[in-house]
Amino acid sequence: MAADKAYSSRANRVYLRRRGISAVIPEKTDQQNNRKKKGSAGGRPVTFDPERYKQRNTVERCFQKIKTWRGLATRHDKTPQSYEAGLHLRGSIMWLKRITSPT
Image (cartoon, rainbow, N blue to C red; front, side, top):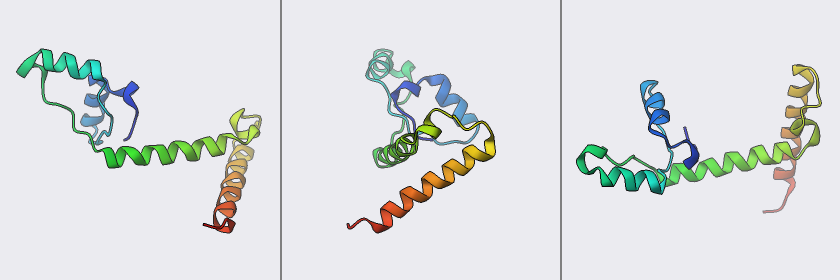
């Protein structure tokens, strides 16, 4: 799971670890400093893969493109079926733009 620094708490990491989910969450600077102040009692530094973290940005940009469609962003569609249909339609439009645009 990739998340931003807001979710870098020890409790979140323990929760994910118990469920066998690898976390790609950068550690906040103040958390790093506090851990270093404690010395060996502060624990190990968290593992962080910057390449996997970069992929998080791609997913977030995709969600932002979906949300630019007002009906999906504001959830005006009342039924789950019509909301899902809007998601499929927006995804199709995004895909068509991608395959027809010159690269």
